[in-house]
Length: 158
Image 1 (cartoon, one colour):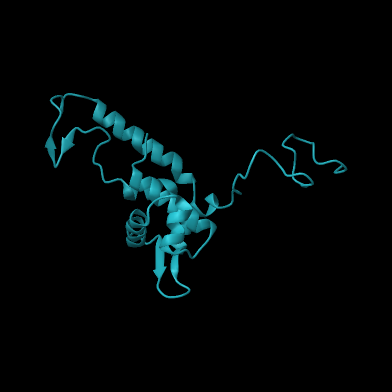
Image 2 (tube, one colour; image 1 turned 180 degrees about the vertical axis):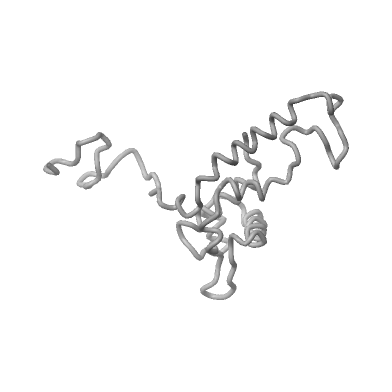
């Protein structure tokens, strides 16, 4: 299952806000690597869903609401998915596929989409920020970080 570009952007924003908040629109655009105009539209949608709050002024910016921190990725994606069907069986309520009504694929694909979302219902936004960013191939010289092998740490770590 592939996410649409807007849903991907919205998820990037909530992850970024879970890590650092508040952030201005420009900071968010830089953080998620997409244009400010797209980011501001996504922030408005997330605000409308009650996941993000926006404050104006010098110390303002976008932040996750309590509901936004508790939201699941599956729940967010369901809210953002405006398609009736995974496959384009209908458009504007009218059948566009000549097999519409005799094909079982529509129901199968819709059930698969729901299973995809259900798998993401266990992933809470607040938990996405707990993963430290990957900064390179391994620990720096003199680091006390694990060397990546079970039971093996830096010299003298015992």
